[in-house]
Length: 338
Ligand code: TRP
Image (cartoon, rainbow, N blue to C red; front, side):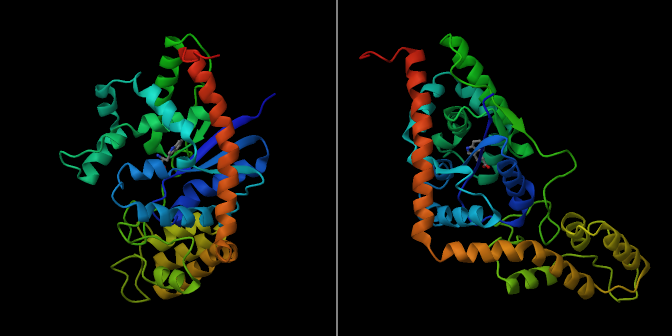
């Protein structure tokens, strides 16, 4: 039986942080290594341009950072096809055909896009490309005939729209060329990692992130600055666990659950200082991030080799996408000269 096909992607708008690692990268590496899937990992630079068209330098610089992050966490070009969206022309052509099968009203109804438009304060100048990015994303997914798309909860409307478009295409052109994808969502309750400051979201704009590229010193400083319990003033005071980022992170990253339970009890009782638990958390995080950092530094020593890896992955992906495009043209009837 043919293997299931997975597509995952990231917009290159900055370095990846441990929230990305926990919520997505770690799982991708596991899926890749299971050997049960054919996996495509895409750097979505075209999508990143939809709201950064006047700042292409940012995308260009972030592309290589994201590629290094991928390699550092263990995405392996021998097992996964790592590709760059802009290097696959078929994606643009597919997008164009799909755009004719979706109404402007439907595009404007996508709740995630709606929220993003508000957040980004485009005003009257919403880039048309931004409004239609769910369609371009459908092209990404269908070009590789991905049936499984691991994404965060905020991408649920994208998956719905993709499935809708696939069905519309297949019915309209009486074909089964396009494969209907399934979203693969993180287990409920395993939400996103909050920021250092306790904000629900870890992000660059909030300046509350730990990056995979951070040095050991940067990591230590960030851990030392984490939001704990503002009322825990003296070591002997009883401290709060809820909303205390140090314990939130320990719950997530420390495999020694007995130890975490003991520390929590001691902290709640009083007598355990913030500096002490932060030092301990730093050790725990260093165990996870140290090896990732080392691999990242190694790959960073040969940037041309990283570009070459992307070039090869893109070439492989291009063949697959081209094949789908030919099938799509055929289905629509654009094969005049055959
Ligand atoms: N929109 C996704 C994000 O911001 C990135 C993305 C682009 C994507 N194309 C995709 C995700 C195709 C899944 C499938 O993270």
